[in-house]
Image 1 (cartoon, rainbow, N blue to C red):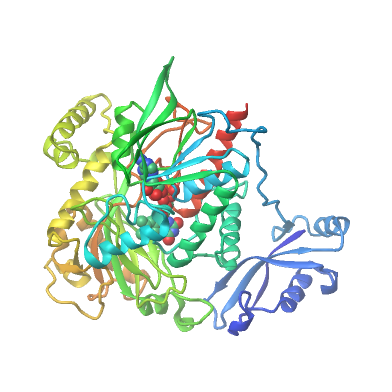
Image 2: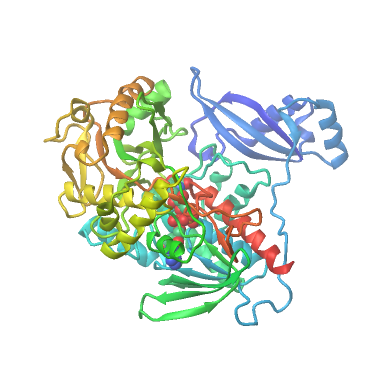
Length: 589
Ligand code: FAD
């Protein structure tokens, strides 16, 4: 087949009946034929590969990439040759997934033979699915509950201020992205089109088919729930097994010349409290960024971990209409465009980058803590994205030198005994030449800010909040303006400078008016800030080698967002597939 890029710029139609493409296939066929210099009747099939919109002109334009097939390969080759070197007319790439390995007949019968996947977020889910499709019958261990039960627990915090630390926005079937906007785009390099496999599997499992061609696809939270359940069923049908409420609490290791070899996992059944041992020499660690107790355990067992930079800040809410107007101008409200999104960045004078994070058009701000006595914000939306407010993180980049060193902070984060011991390690590392950050130091800062937000918010899971006008004027807020916050269970008006470090507050105060010049109304006085946003990415990295195994612990495959190999649903899924492929190769080689 032949791929025709940007062949068809044409006025878009609004007729809902004609969705998902706003142009009838005949019109697209005609435009593609024109671009190719052939007769429309010569095109045997036409598929829309990507569709985006250009709202800069008086007419709203749709821009397509389409794949067309001609009667036979010879005709396609001749046509491609005729158009070489036109960069907009190319052979359609092969985007199918080709499994690199297949389990031998009868695989899995021997004890300890089956690979284990720890965590059933997008990374663990796609690792398990790929392993199951290759015949390796994975055992998945997930500390949280199946997605429907988990949904009830998550709503428990939002509606009744009751947190279940093992079943919440971060933990449980589907992982951190289940209650989200379900944005499915990423800027990772993906020469093997593994992102396409993730999308194809989502659609097979019930996601709307438009995610395959929309320029900025998203699923929305409720549709994701069903998709996650269907992928689980597929893994089970292929011989996999999923054990919910099973938390990995320790590693069994045997020494090697330059590190360790995994021999098994200690697993706690959270329903009974019983601890079991599961033999395995291959485990994918797809923990996500919030499994802090597991990170401490890995550090204690000597698994190589490094501290890394991440970002902290707040969520900002505007009326969606303000964002639509600024982004789409006269086309604001056009049904084909939906709710507008944005991406912003500013480099502040104090050297800090301030940027928008995880923007959720037409969505709500959600309580995203997984730990008692702490407050964390994030955002989600439904597929329709039709809530009144737009929200996004407004976060400031921080580095390991920002992380606290004093023992009191470490004790507050990890308890007296463990905190004292870890603080001593951190202080020793800081005196080394060159100084190094302790692998767990970012968690100390996260816990410090989240605890502070809980206290300032009133100690009942309400989030501390402030209006942008008051934040800029350096005074606490006392009444709401035209924007009502969407965060549940509630927001307490305060001065957010009491919650965040001074450098972050200064950088955000500088950035807001700059953002207001890019998106008119962004710095409106009534826009609402709530905090704190601390779970932007993992505060650590678990280094791995070329074959995706930990650099010092053979058999452990650190993967996904928690190990810092992904930043979002799509990239986590892609990383899961890559790691599953390496693991399968290692088993069979
Ligand atoms: P996770 O999804 O975090 O999954 C890790 C899993 O491991 C969890 O289910 C956890 O319970 C389990 N686990 C942890 N420790 C253990 C243990 N010891 N034993 C057993 N199980 C364990 N990304 C996007 O691309 N688009 C969005 O719109 C988007 N919106 C978001 C909205 C919210 C509210 C949140 C919180 C995140 C959002 N993200 C979004 C980010 C996205 O969810 C993550 O990047 C992604 O889920 C990371 O996938 P993962 O599989 O690596 O980790």
